[in-house]
Amino acid sequence: MVTHFSRFQHLLLQPRLLSSHQSRALQHPLIRTLTVIRSVMGSSSSSSSSKLLFRQLFEKESSTFTYLLADVSNPVKPALLIDPVDKTVDRDLKLINELGLKLVYAMNTHVHADHVTGTGLLKTKVPGVKSVISKASGSKADMFLEPGDRVSIGDIYLEVRATPGHTAGCVTYVTGEEADQPQPRMAFTGDAVLIRGCGRTDFQGGSSDQLYESVHSQASFHANLIFTLPKDTLIYPAHDYKGYEVSTVGEEMQHNPRLTKDKETFKSIMSNLNLAYPKMIDVAVPANMVCGLQDLPPQANL
Image (tube, rainbow, N blue to C red):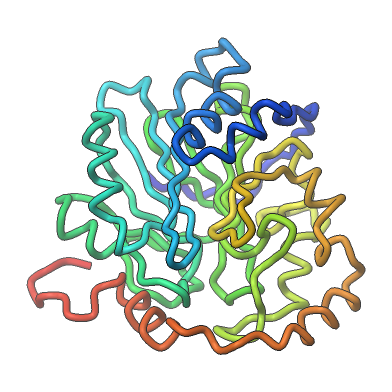
């Protein structure tokens, strides 16, 4: 269910960081997802924490993270995927079936340029799954999100925050602030904030000025910012190229080599990256603008 809201309250929480043992465990590919679950759920015995089942999945060719979230306290066990990749759809569905979940939404943080989204393929394999993306993306989907919307699975919801800059249609999905929502909070930042970095801003309507504001803005209506979230908020990006898996708002505020700079320095850094033309962009963007299925049968419903 998608709910439309105009404002959210801001709640400061005390930092809770991963232990050194957890950090080492995260580097092991076979226990990575279990460790992340414990960091979100295991430190609290509250029913709000035990609602969430969470998995962080990885597609190595494009270095893309896909995230699986489900409310396991609900009899149906409704679930969603964030940023699925076409090449790993079968893997994701196998896991969902093994865990006894019902996939409801296949969501994207933005129109990706480095891989073809799995949302369209998921819709052909799982009847009733809804594709979800921001209205500002200009892409096709079943549901279009705007800043302030909420996407719910059972009693768990994600806030939608507009974080344009990498592309014009980027959004960040943030878990709720209330006591009955998983704590610490989680922010799925797409390419807006990467671990010790950020997405490029030189194509798809990107803007370094806009990205900086998306991350740093202090506006009272804060549906479009990241760094005013509680410092222990866990940051889960769409990609990583250096072996990182999770960070926090507090870490990135202190250590991100780009986003810790003032705006003019940041803009200078971004304009001098001299990055190569994305090798998949001419395939990925057209496909992702139509939900990842370019040759969709006429009778199918996007």
